Structures are given as C-alpha cells and as structure tokens.
Amino acid sequence: MNWYLKVMSQYADFRGRARRKEFWMFFLFNMICAYGLQILASAAEVPALLFVAVLYTFAVLVPSLAVGVRRMHDVGKSGWYLLIPIYSIVLAVIHGENGENQYGKDPKQTQEVKLQKV
Image (cartoon, rainbow, N blue to C red; front, side, top):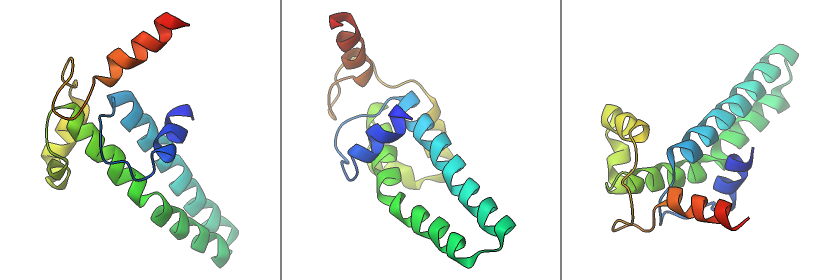
C-alpha cells in the first residue's frame, strides 16, 4: 500500500527513477482495485459503480504512465521505450542500473541509506 501511495504522491512526476518493487507493487494494487470495482459493479448490477470503475481507471492513467517512465529511466532507457509492447515488459522486469545514471540517483541505494540512518 505504501508503494501505491508513493506513486500517487508523485502523480505526474516523469523525472527520476522507480525501482522494480515500486512499479510492480503499484501495478498489482492498481489491478486489484480496478478489477475489484468492475466485478463489484457487475455483480451488484449498479451502473453507478461501473462509472466509478471507469473514473478510477482514468484517474490513475497519468500516475501509471509516470511510474512506467520512471521504471524505464531506472534501466537507463528513455520513457518512450514504454510504447514498445513486449520490450517494455522485459525492461520492467530486469534489474535497474547500479549507481547514478543520466536520469538520477539509484533509488535502491537511496532506500538503503535511509534504512541505515534509522
């Protein structure tokens, strides 16, 4: 849930890098919410719930694109690689570049430094 809220707090931030865990946890929670709303709407046969499901889908479109672009940045690629269907999935699965790259600091190292300070 924290990863989902982190992505939502960076609503339209296309700069920087996103870890695999951040991307996939957001993806998982987003799919659970979207499909859960759709199943609930169809089971209850309430058109208003279907409207809420569609509204939710459009509301998370920008953060989904933003975290996808940041994930592409983590592997050292431009955000435009998100438009290549199979290759973008492969890039989302592979390990990000170690250390700083042209898109920013390594989010994994930043997380480890925060944990060491606590």
